[in-house]
Image (tube, rainbow over all chains, first blue to last red; front, side, top):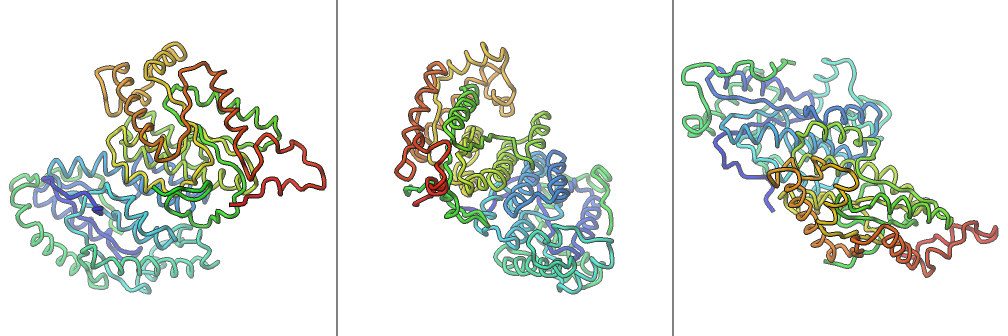
Length: 244
Length: 257
């Protein structure tokens, strides 16, 4: 059975993946700003942001109610809601949809939690196949240093504390993110990831991304996707991405 | 389709659950909206408790994790079919892991008002891929019995109109819009649900119970069927309410499978 729904529509879908601290959110927000400044209709969707599901996820996390299975299912529910009411209609309409994390996040993270690989793959079968998936490759130590330096506290599920890997949050985080990293690396080739070296400068990574977008979406950028000729389209129509 | 043993997983094992530890009984009541499932579940529970069984009854959207969220999401009428299917599956998984499995470990009779079959039927009635949802819900346990309360659409319509007095948005499938108004949509949507359940009947070994009859008659049939169920060689009714001291209760409940 096919992994995803083929994108037979006018719009395009660009997604970024990578472990926490790989810098992917910064890059996709820079990319979406740039595409918008080129006049393209750009939409932005973030992992775990469905207004209908978010409350349940938040409560479950706060009260530590999740098992690997329900954690996987609630994120799939969130994704399905965004997919049905936002991503798919906009891709159909001819927008370039940029997604900060996609189904691959679940493939890596849920499997790292012990959920069956085949089951999670099937769970997301309804998702549209991305036209481009950028994977931000970063050594574990670099990512851990970035996270430790940038934020006050690592969250319970982010650190995989539910798995009982270690009593120490930082140690648990390191082990868990290491497992996720292994899962990403294992699927990088078969999923056709475009690999970006996330230890390069922000500017260089962005330059590479833009080059790949122009080359890969070439025809589609000329005709197909919605564009305001010579002008900036719907700038600020979606929530302004925060640079981390 | 292979013959499945009760209290085994359909296709995907749930992480952390050893089915050899499950000793209770899992009984499911299925059927379309307004067919009278909850009335039957309430009466069965009362009867089983009188017989001395510890009973857990549970049903859709009652999980601690997702129950509230589902109800809120349904109020807004903006939940798409796939998100709805997965939200209900999350709710089911939470109850399975935190209520149903612990109760089965403790030897309870677990009575369920709608199992994965309703989730599957709703998805299929809305045009979603049957194999997709079957695999998604594959971590469910095979019940000892599934009683499918089957009634005609006309019967359901009369129960809704006489009983509740109005059609419900979701029960009428108005999210997809199967007809020009709620009545028309209800008839078409419920027909699709019934068809989907009918197709599952053989595949999942349902016992079909004619629910066009009065509630008392349906209850008698269910009681007779459940009473005659052979559990480890003993019909359910012969298990004493207060077991004699030297015969530990555990024995009577012990699973041989």
